[in-house]
Image (cartoon, rainbow, N blue to C red; front, side, top):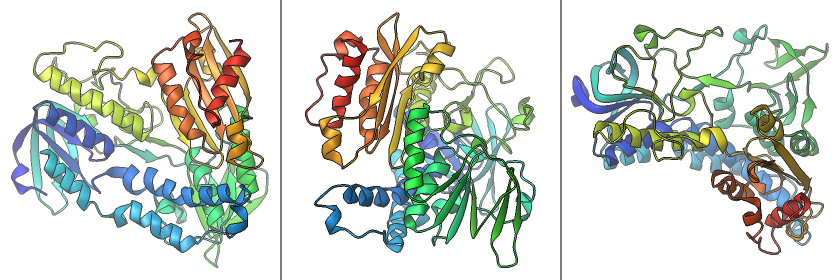
Length: 484
């Protein structure tokens, strides 16, 4: 904490020092402005300590082992199980043992000030901070206040949930031991990834989802992930409601399901989505009200600027999960870079109004090319629109899909199973989206992202020759099937 920050002015005040807040502050400082970060927890945020990094550290050893087990010559040389203690220790390394010293040093070296504490708005460009040491700080922004506060887990309406101790994703990714049995509530990305991670670490896992597994992805792709989970022993209870959770005398928890059955386990992980973490920020004091769900939400333009602020001067920005658009760390960092540059440009009079599409100040990719990866085994990777979404958005769209059966996949492992799809705008003959499912398909995704962002014509994309023998040869097969 910097005591001198009390009662001080900065060009920009950023509330939230996760990856998104760090990037905003970095960009405005690069643009010649001063910035202060306010953070109540660890500098580096959710991704560094409880989400992206620890979850992938838990998943990777199992994927590596499974890859070896499916490759003749390697499978004969490996054991059949993971060393759970070693996996957890490696996870600890990637979270820096939940210490943020290196991140704090980066903030200082970058020329950004840091105040540790809980912040809230008290008026236009005015922020009050309750320091973690009991001190009070009054901060004023000359140009902008940026909300980079991330998101918080949803609490599903399950009877008894408030009366028992359950895991959220934080508790799961920072767990010090592997439970004998684990029940996962939620069939989204976090639920699927952590179900597989703990199954491969030795837990007996049951995943319960009110709808299907990874329902926002094409069914052919999510079906491959479901098969992968089942192969690891995960019991999938899909399209099944959770009615009640109760504690037992032996310390276990029993989940009562809508079909009349029950599941008992040592731990229950609730992973049923997230919403922007905007409560307690004083937004009500400047005219914002909760929506019908009781949550606050903000509408930000292409540069992250919130237009619905009191007075004529626009000064409030929301980025990353706090903006509620795309809850991905990489997309939040992209938004942060655009927002930081826009703030600096407005401060020097180089930007007026809403920035144009695809400029350095606009988050245009949010509408057209958001990449995402589900790091299960097999992986699921997608960018842009699905066929259903494209047609809903008014495009004259078609799709081409096929199994991934090329020389590269057969060399990758025995019995490789994969699936690929391209979504095409028939009027312009460019890609609107792509989805890949299969082992190690995440590395195919950036090529698809470039094709979508660049609006590369298919007849030009035909000349992008994939190296042989790689899994990328599926691009050639997809274009051939399309008719090129």
